[in-house]
Image (tube, rainbow, N blue to C red; front, side):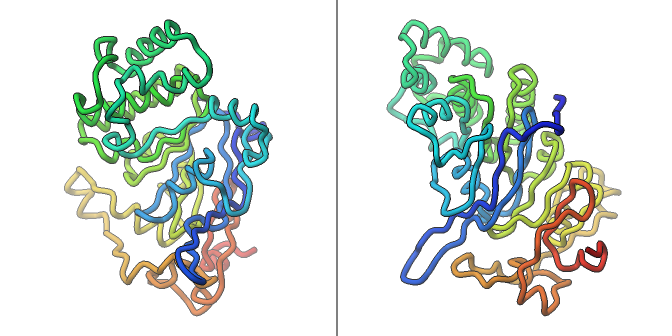
Amino acid sequence: MFVDYSGEPLIQVKNLCKYFHVGRNATLKAVDNMSFNIYKGETVSLVGESGCGKSTTGRCMIRLYEPTSGQVIYDGKDITKLTKEEQKEFTKRVQMIFQNPYASLNPRMTVKEIVGEGLKVHGLAQNEIDQRVQELLETVGLNKDHMSRFPHEFSGGQRQRIGIARALAVNPEFIICDEPISALDVSIQAQVINMLNELQDNLGLTYLFIAHDLSVVKYISERVVVMYLGTMVEMAETEELYGNTLHPYTKALLSAIPEADPKRAKENKRIPIKGEITSPINPKNCCRFAGRCQYATERCHNEMPELREVKPGHLVACHLMDEQFPK
């Protein structure tokens, strides 16, 4: 799908922070000073290991969590300053597909009730809801016979399709896909990814795709944002990031992608990440990856690196870049 980067971004995340107080004088910095844009029709992937703050970032962008500081601007408006009417409109335009299809669907509700719940909130008549639910189920590869069934009667892949139908119900423009395939079998993952691509082409959707699987990210996204322990360490267009990786953490992540070709697998050297993950509770104001980075210097342990553009569209937060790309 063609993406116009010349206009205003659809979503602007500016210096977003989300902190949780977890005890006396103890603050968990789940998201710390994240900034990036997403343009209409684009898929931006957010990657990083478990616990780095990917899902928290997504939930702040949809106001399931209130940001501690910073801004999320959607179509020119700060989402934390919307009126009641604007907030209702915002919930129509922005939706989320949740990570676990076994936990995100209410077991006491039928598929018709689950998918039609948002439509009911927005005031559609019951006969219109029934027709719309049937259309949505057909869109995601199910049929009207599934409407009266309960979630426990479906496989994981089918449940995730129901979750996607629910997200599509109110005709959103922007969907946050929070690891939508991580709980599914590999054979089903490809089906769901292809379906998301088709839906984007047909409906003009914009995605934030949160993922672990870097081979999937390469296939689905235009740009990639790499997170480590609540901070953003690298961002670039997909081809640039995979072909010209700069941050040591991103290099280690990409080296872990399994290679099907035995010859190429032998040539690919795995970059091990040693050491313990730094605690996100009251972290020191320095590079969060310094304790595990083989190239770390004294400066890395004492000073937070600035996220800066070292090449057009390629941003990195690493002190090593000062030598490679002088300011």
